[in-house]
Length: 330
Image (cartoon, rainbow, N blue to C red):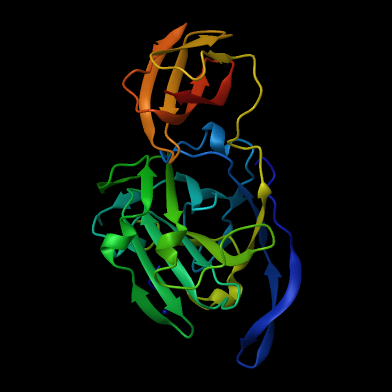
């Protein structure tokens, strides 16, 4: 923004965070616990996939500016691993318009979801703002305080893997109800090109806020996770950021015991699948989380001879089971 649940986990504390016109501000502190992944996650904007199941969401329900005629309902989830942070938005929306498809363009004018975060525990007022249209076009800056803004190089921004359910452009505003999702993976190494980064791990906290806005449609609005006190919409106020608390590894996304069995493992040509309840959809991912193969209507076995040798993860969904297991191609 360029204007100057399953039950979700956040703790509410009243604290004094700053001064406006010489008066102390009583501010609610918002806290979200971020779990660690144990296996790769595919970026495909699927809110319901296994990796996000059981992950607590937060709701963006603090309004800035005038009350819009329609209030979008926005939920966000976040995870991390040793190399990346992952974010997914789900927005129940109306009046959706997207006309920006240029990186670092005026994305905040369109249907837009935003993640502002300070990754350096020693400098909580220095932060990145990652703003992305519902069509997947990003803007990203690094900001020092008071506001000194540095746009990230577009080549660097392209290192962020983004998936979206909406088309890239929606020039004719969608006035009917529509639910859209946006998911991305932000490499920590990218952040380290521009700032000191306290790498996520148990005991590490980042300060952050999540936003949903659209300033140039027939229903302009500005909503936040952590409440921001400002006479006009302004997301660039890091003193109001909430806290992201990075936790120990979670079972989410890991490999669980199940009635479904893969054999032989290791294998060279075929993988047989025992214990299916129905015809299954099978996806194979490499260790970086990229999908290598897709099979539908699987009842007994799949051919894997085209895969390169190495470790893979196979996700199996048969209407009853939705599990992920490892196997080795040799």
